[in-house]
Length: 257
Ligand SMILES: O=C(O)c1ccccc1NCC(=O)[C@H](O)[C@H](O)COP(=O)(O)O
Image (cartoon, rainbow, N blue to C red; front, side, top):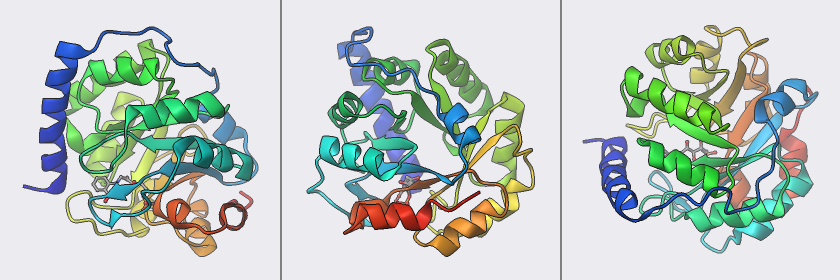
């Protein structure tokens, strides 16, 4: 059993419960109509998806003092292109209320970062004001990923399609993903290697597909490495959550393309 297996098992229970208790609250939270793909593709500097992440399986507790609305506003003021909110409770200490709190105060896209295995989680993401959802290639078979991909599109949600190896990248391309995130972290072993982005970037036409490099990004040199192979965006969690000066951190990482 890997940690991803454990998380997915937990998600099955969560979805079962959601199906008994959740009713759609069409547009219950403030909705902001803004596209991650469009803004990142037109940006002149590296776009940053700044993450709200209290804890993680690989690092344990990272920052449990964070107030999502305050941090979200600061991320936006410092130049974030999107805010990723981890909403998984058992492994990351996040909640859907964190997502709603961020949505209320920012005007940039908000990503519901969770382990999506069912349509009901997409309904909920929409209701809570997300613009973008995450689909992880390693989590589900291709056919199921495609069903969820199509359903998310129907809800007018953008999809960050996450891959970690060549086989998963093939799946992303076949499904027609236009935003592909290469996760530098192996979700089974926690090993982080930026060479993953360098390797997989060769498989995509980065003029059409928006390439995002995810995980393990800490320094300007890291950003230069992934920029040089075509990434226009980076997803940064721990570095943001531990930063003592977010303005400086953003200025350091938002390099010219
Ligand atoms: O971060 C983990 O330990 C983790 C473990 C298992 C599944 C997912 C996990 N993280 C989710 C992410 O992909 C990261 O939060 C995200 O890419 C940011 O990474 P970082 O900048 O290294 O915090």
